[in-house]
Image (cartoon, rainbow over all chains, first blue to last red; front, side, top):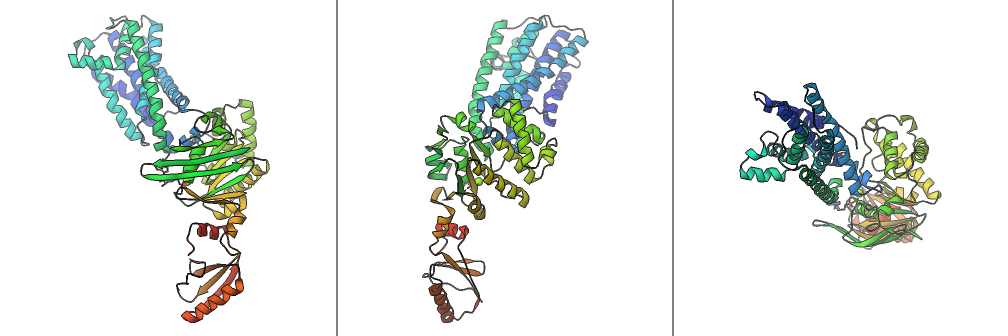
Length: 229
Length: 301
Ligand SMILES: Nc1ncnc2c1ncn2[C@@H]1O[C@H](COP(=O)(O)OP(=O)(O)O)[C@@H](O)[C@H]1O
Ligand SMILES: [Mg+2]
């Protein structure tokens, strides 16, 4: 399950870039802060771009029934989608790192950054897959739902506004968002002061990954019936 | 040993009772036809037997594996050609077949050998490196058949494999079915084409609105129409044949089923004289499976 299609590229690559440029222009921010933010937003958008699209496409192209007739279970299929989406997210996210290198902004802790990117890419892909369990074969419907989920998360996850500056309700929401924890890891990796201890960030991301993935499998098992009809 | 066992399968989709208790057995090496009109429940049955849909109640086994509990094992021994399904349009024919082989856990060597054999047999080997996007419907279906056979399955499910195909592809698929049957494979074939099941199947089940009406050999089902002869009559205008004739109207003709041609012929003549209609044409022929199908569905008065 290895495709990159038009809408995926637009939503996954160009959008975060524009969003981010719009945000930085006319502000006086440190390059570390910028690159850390850019990495977060790119990982998030790129890894949530492929996985939501796969299921409705498979349904619409009617390749789904062929696949589920083979001796593989839904878990394996979803895992395949998620891993493909994760790989896509991870590779795309190398770009902001290179931009960082270009403007002489280097991460101080590479293993933590890459580890964080990998686990978050998996976590966000699973989230994407979970979103696509909505039983519709119209890619546009799923894309719309996924945008509805993704944009608020970006604004709430401390990329643009640090979490400690948010009002109480905003903080509550921010801590419910998995992206907050990766943003924290990215900050840390670029030598900035993190809001939470590192192991908490990782633990939460892993928990969310398991939760999203398990839920995605459960819901997809149900959704398949509607998709093949 | 039985290849397929279905015991009292029931399935409901919302308010639609798609299957109302389906029971049948298919022996190893048998070609089993599953005949019914659109919406009768054929595809739902196939999906349950291939482990894609869970029945609400009842159970099904394929080669002894319970399809609900031992789903993966059951799927390993079967090959499926779904009714409406596609290969990946952006992959080539070869890539599609190899991808399927991978899902069946075949080794690359084995898969390549088998893929080449199958693609050659189905006449698409020359096009193996073209994307499926440009294939005709018939070619796509032949490719799907290759994909269904890649793992050399013991039991093969074909859901309306020839419907809407060009004559050549349809014939190729039918010939392949006979060939597979000869080599001892079990085949479950759904169709609404009487001719097809008559040609291919050892036994046929007729399903109507989620219930099996009859299971028998094509020959016996034909014989069920009652008489061994069908009398086709054309009058000069539309008439209402009395109920004592076992008859049905087909186009502008009336078909009367009888065991005694003389008796039936004279009665029809008497009727025509009495009603003042003219007989324009009379033919006798043996009843077809289609006659039988309509007859068991209660279309014959
Ligand atoms: N996934 C589904 N959701 C809702 N209704 C369905 C679904 N699959 C089949 N049905 C309904 O069940 C009945 C039997 O359908 P099906 O098994 O596809 O018939 P056939 O293959 O004989 O044409 C139909 O009335 C159909 O509308
Ligand atoms: Mg059908």
